[in-house]
Length: 289
Image (spheres, rainbow, N blue to C red):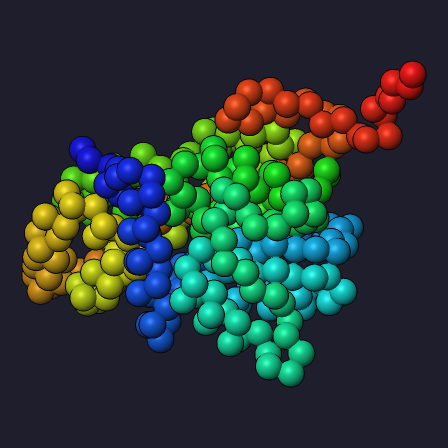
C-alpha cells in the first residue's frame, strides 16, 4: 500500500501542504468539526493542574478558536497563535478582537518555531501530528521552544482512522502513530512523564460529497494513489446509502492525545544530531589567568 501522503522532496512536500492550507483558509469552515472536538478534549488536560503559564504557543492555530480559549483560561498569559499558512494566520488575526487583541499571530514552521528558544511555558499543538512530515523532528522543534519544565499538549490521529476507506483507496497511514510509538518518540526527544491516551469516534455521513470534502480537507487527495481510487470510494458510499441497508456511512477515527514536560536544566537530552546536555550558565566555570 502507498503512504497516505505522497513522499516528495521535503521542500516540495511542504510547499504542497502550504498550498493546501492556503486553499482551506478561503472556506467558510476551515476547521473540521473533529479538530474542534479533539482540541476541547486536549484542553481538558489542563483541568485541575496548578499551572500558570506566562507564555503560550498555539501551534497550527487554525482560525484561533483554541487560542481564544487558552487566553480565557489564562488571562494574564501572552498567547502566540502560530500557523505555517499565511492565509490561515491572517484569518486567525481577524478573529482575535480588533480593540484588544487576545493573542499575537505569527507564521512559522513548527519544526523551527520563529521564537526565542526555551521561552514558552505551554505548547498547545492540536491535530498537528496528523499533518507532520516527520513527527520526531516536530517533537524536537517543540521541545526547543519550551522552557525547562514546560508542558506540551499534542494530539493527532491513530492507525485505526478511516480503516474501511483506506482499504478502498489503497493508502497506508504510516505517519499516524499508536500510543506506544508516540510515547517512545516523546521520551527520545527528551520529554519527561509522557501521559498518553486514545479514544475512538464514529462519524456518520449521509452524503458522499460531504465525506469527499472532509477527506480533501484532511489532505488525502494529495496522495496520487488515493486520488486514483477516489471515484471508487464515492461509488461504494453511494451504493451503500442507496441500497437501503443502512441510512448512513460510518467512519472510524482514532484520536490520540499526549502530554509531557520539557526536561529540567542539566538533564541529558537527545536530538536528531545526537545526545545533548543542558547546563545552567551559573554552573559553568570561568578559567582566569
